[in-house]
Length: 124
Image 1: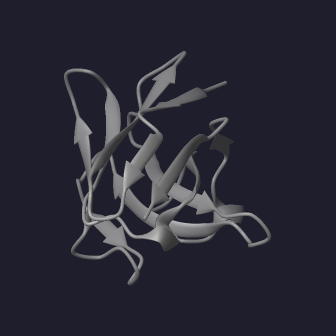
Image 2: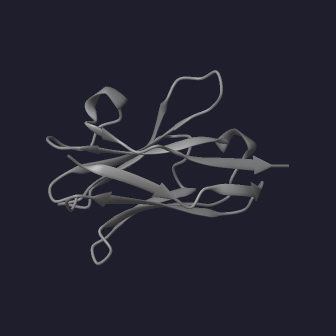
């Protein structure tokens, strides 16, 4: 069983930056794919970004491409999400998820493990 723990959320002004981290307890990410998703009040959970731990291949939602960067930290066995030029629409609970088999994927149903989420609030 893999437990995921997110950290780094908080309150930031529009145009600012935040860094989220996702750590796995119980094992390393190994050959997993790791994704970040977000859910705003009253909306469905949506894909933000994903990375293959083994290959480093990444994918982004169009809404964050060029502003967010997902990366892996081999030494700390964490996956990070660097968020810059934040907008009011980026306000949401951000979740880290891990997928045991297969390549990176944008569908939440394809992921096996989920963290508890971390709140990101962008203010004007």
